[in-house]
Length: 408
Ligand code: RFL
Image: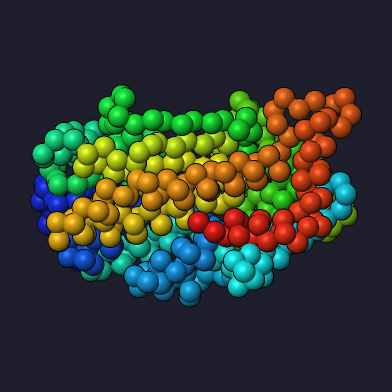
């Protein structure tokens, strides 16, 4: 079925309404549809936007296993690559950590490197090819009666008309600023918010990767990062002064700064190329607790937001989508509500573990905003140096790192 035929076939109710066609919403909708559940996906953006929005690239082994389990991993295996090494660069030199061969009792765990937009495009094609219902250009405005008997979603349709969709369950997979979060009445959930006080300039360069590892450079001038995406595209990050716009520096200055922080003079040049995309990311985290209000469930970034330092967000989104799909299927097909009742606690366990490791990584890679670097080595900087030294030399510490770095 094509995307336009698909839109014509829509009804204005479904057993499950899924908001948002990111990794969480698309995995969930695919699994529900495969289980014969009547579901519809409502997405604010266009199909082109959804298929091309570049974000994550590092997918954990467990994410690969989930996609495999449900026949959703063809593209990942065909076009993705594997990755298992980090390289830390500091003023004490560089060291490599082969995390793919460590952790989980030595069984190893490598990341899949597969751009998020490829994964999303694969999931969307899979869903549409099997007759899954999706409505693009349809913005959810609010979720109502979530703790009543007939929950509904109000939307702005492509022609601008307001519409009401009714459902038995609503899955809020519409990200941090989506309607699901906004619709939680005050007092029913607790929102934890933490600002790590660090900002990144995220860059996508039309240039091949410059090293065969994830590069983490810790420098007095701030953090710099290198992550492969495809043979021709590389993601770089520069720690950035908050409030300064992304286009403040010309490309030449950005590359020169990356050279300095990545210590290219000591460890080899970076492959330069035009910068396709620049974005500013404040490293903040956010958790909603519990991830449910009546018939409304949150998954992915709508449930918890993580700083991108440890590459966890898309992985949690896929994991939560699988857990929620099973729970909703049990509830709708067998009247068994144990899964929906346990959904929030089960996911929060993973979320807090990922938040903890992400916070640790953030403190490993950056000076805290109040660190007094100018007046000689500050207390915080000395702790950070010691943390890196421990990671360089302690096998136990490396095992712990590996397990948490690839684990979700
Ligand atoms: P998404 O991907 O944001 O999708 C949400 C979808 O909802 C739609 N939407 C609405 N639709 C209808 N009505 C509304 N009112 C709506 N509001 C929003 C949006 O158009 C969109 O299509 O959420 P989801 O599915 O929860 O997935 C989360 C991931 O996208 C995110 O956690 C990751 O990208 C985080 N992340 C990484 N995660 C990893 O696991 N590994 C990585 O390597 C990694 N790298 C990254 C990242 C995030 C980054 N940014 C952008 C902060 C690198 C970066 C730079």
